[in-house]
Every structure is written in C-alpha cells, then in structure tokens.
Amino acid sequence: MELLCPVCGLPLCKEERLWRCVKNHSFDIARQGYVNLLTVDKKHAKHPGDTKEQVAARKSFLDGGFYAPIAETVRELITPLSPKAVLDAGCGEGYYLTKLQEALPEAAFAGIDISKDAVRFAAVRNKNALWLTGTAASLPFPDKSFDCVLSMFALTVEQEFARVLKDDGYYLRVTAGEDHLMGLKQIIYPEILRKEKELHPQFHGFRLEQTKTINFTFTLESNKQVQDLLSMTPHFWRISKEGAERLHQTDTLTDTAQVVFDLYQKE
Ligand SMILES: C[S@@+](CC[C@H](N)C(=O)[O-])C[C@H]1O[C@@H](n2cnc3c(N)ncnc32)[C@H](O)[C@@H]1O
Ligand SMILES: [Zn+2]
Image 1: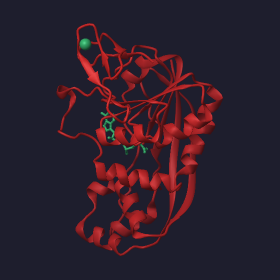
Image 2: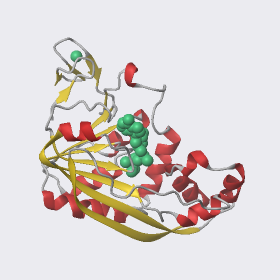
Image 3: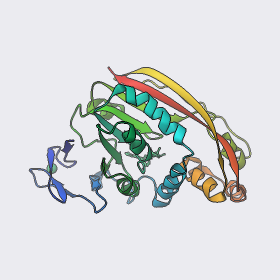
Image 4: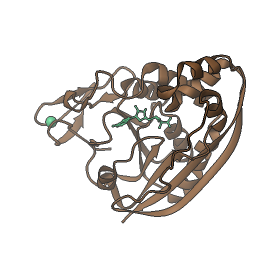
C-alpha cells in the first residue's frame, strides 16, 4: 500500500523502522507496528480523539461479542464486493476491520484514527493491517487507492473519501439508529428528547446504493460492562451527575441496539 508524506505530499518509502520521503521527512514505526502520521499542525489537542480509558472500555465491550451482529452485517455487505484494498476511517481499536479481514484474507487493509491510543490497541490486536495515526480530514494515501472505505460510528469526509476511492468504489457508513440503546438512555436521562436525525444523507460524489437497518438485543451482566457501553457512546460526554449515579447502581442491563448501514457508490 502506498503512503504519502503528511508534510509535503510526496510518496513515503518504507525502511526498516521508519517511513521516509525524498525530502527527508521521516515517521517512525512504533514498537507495536503502527505509524504516527499526525503532524502537530493537524492536532487540535495534545491527545486528540478517544482517550485511553475510552479505547480500553470499547475494546473490552467489543471483545465481549455484544456487537458481533454489526461485524457480521459489515461482512455480509462488503464480502460480495470482493475489494482488494479497504480503509477503515476512524477505526478505533480495530475490532471491525479485523473481523472483516477474517472474511477477506487476500485483501489489503488499512485503519486510520486520530487517537494514538486507539491505533496502538489496534496494532497489538492485528499485525496484518497497516495502522496509522492521522486524520481522516487529510488522508495520507494517493488518489484511487481503495475499493472500499468504512466509517463505523465515525466521521464522513466526503471529498477525501471520494478522492482515495477507485472509480465505482464503495463507502459504507455505519451509524446508530434513532432507537439505539433506549434502555441505557432511560436510565441516564429523566426525559428522553428525540432528536431528528438525518437518515441516509446525500454525499457529494456518491450515490446511495443500499441501506439496511438491524435491531438486536443483548444483556450486560456487570456494572463494568454497563460502564464500558456508556464510554463508547456520546452520552459519556453528556451524562448528568444524577444519571451517572443511577448508572452506577445498574448491574444488569438488557438493551436493544439499532444500527443503520448505508452503502454508497462513488459516482
Ligand atoms: C465512536 S468512535 C468509533 C470507533 C470504531 N470505528 C468503532 O466503531 O469501534 C469514533 C472514532 O473516531 C476517531 N476520530 C475522531 N476524529 C477523527 C478524525 N478527524 N480522523 C480520524 N479519526 C477520528 C476517534 O478517535 C474514535 O476512535
Ligand atoms: Zn515529505
């Protein structure tokens, strides 16, 4: 897979322990195997993206298999497309990319996330993908590098995604549905305000090809699992003191996930 220098945009060449461009900008390969391509000017915080604690909670929850139906649906939608190269933008700690790779062992996989902690976990999880710290707003790949880009509960940067996709390539956007995790919401909010969500948005340069919504129920059997789930959601940032206290008393939770899969094709 080809990488571009985030400083000057020229190709990077892989050496033993680093990637370097002809202008001598170089990027170390970390002990765990990932490469940090996030330059200081693109960082909006010292440690942007999810924190180490959030990443650890997400890993623990996903490894519990509670969201396996999501990974299974990604596999169902992507495998028939037989991609040769796949990018996961906002890959987190690499669970979904790794699951998809099991079904497509011949394809090349890359994951990028702005959180160094997330990418470090991903690189430990899976040695057979290219893991990068960087921003999806400026992807370090040449035009038309991928057959498929995924964004799982992460951002869409339509122009960049269209640029790195080959002609007719696919973009799979996975988001929470309106009725996602109502059980958790009922515990943490006295009153649930339903926000109108834009379903199946249009993206410039893409045509919506297919959409699928899944609902599935799962049961958490410890407060740790409940807290891990909270850390994965935007409610983690919004929860009130009272809500946090109620959740603290919650040792079991049966909840329903609602997840929307929108598959777009590049026009
Ligand atoms: C809700 S998490 C989802 C993680 C993973 N896709 C999953 O579903 O397990 C969103 C991720 O987007 C990452 N992120 C936020 N801004 C980003 C950016 N500009 N470029 C790349 N990743 C970003 C965060 O660090 C976080 O890991
Ligand atoms: Zn350079």
